[in-house]
Length: 429
Ligand SMILES: [Zn+2]
Ligand SMILES: [Zn+2]
Image (tube, rainbow, N blue to C red; front, side):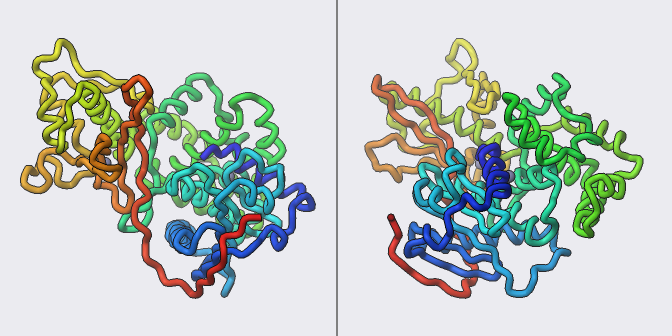
């Protein structure tokens, strides 16, 4: 999601709570599910309501892995709304939210999002992000410095559901590129200034083109570094900072309590850490899928209709090509293959535990899926990502060529116990 939207919402609602429509008025019959930590209401379906509740509980467990020491007040549940359309979302939150996908209302303690034309994983990412603001507000601090609040929300917003819980800490290639550019252009604030940034300064950054994005990027990268840098040995610094906020200490005091005289050294280390950052495997897989789907698009256009993934790859006459197969992916990665071995490496997911073991899944990780029907080009699917599948699809242009779209499939719902569920008609006003 674009974090800019969510923070605008966060701020507007914090300052102008009186502008909001009363939730009761904007709430026709909704589907409702309650779990240990959440009351979820949607106007979509009971299935979706359960799915959202399961995602919220799942990401909550991930928040708790780091913040488990801040106990939940007994019986307190957080309220989450998900609407199918923007209209209902604005009815609840107010027109000031136009252009945002989700918000946390600090005054009322609820969060809301709408689906519109988002995929489910895109919706869930908004919920993971806003859900952290809600969690922070309820459990830790109502006055959390924005660098930490947004940095952590961005960190959880990129979480990936897997069969063993949520994976956090992945780094996308475009983020690395932006980080290095900002460092080179001296666009980041000194830590001693950034940790003291006020809400007014944070929000005023929206007036300078690009500056809001730079602040989010710096906040995320600092959080990411404090968690993963120096092999995780800096997490006590982050914990001390958060514990200090919990005790009600000011931003400045918390900064001194946590960093002491080490601030400059840690800041220098953060710069080195950025210089050495590498793309996480899941994003390498996306690039691979885009590359391989581009080969499929060429073969499909030329009239070839391979029935299996192996058939397609084996049909690429790579040794007879004049030059290498080349592609700049949507993440900006330059990729090429000029030998059979290089091409085969691109057909493997870095997370495939069976890669190279011919007997297990063959030499390739990816498979064809004909879910869109036998007449359509198959989707190329990677099944190595737990609850989510990654897939590359060919979309036809009018001139008969194709463009490739890589996305996350909606995956499977995780099972969790529900305390109660209550149906209703989807409410359209
Ligand atoms: Zn946010
Ligand atoms: Zn993969």
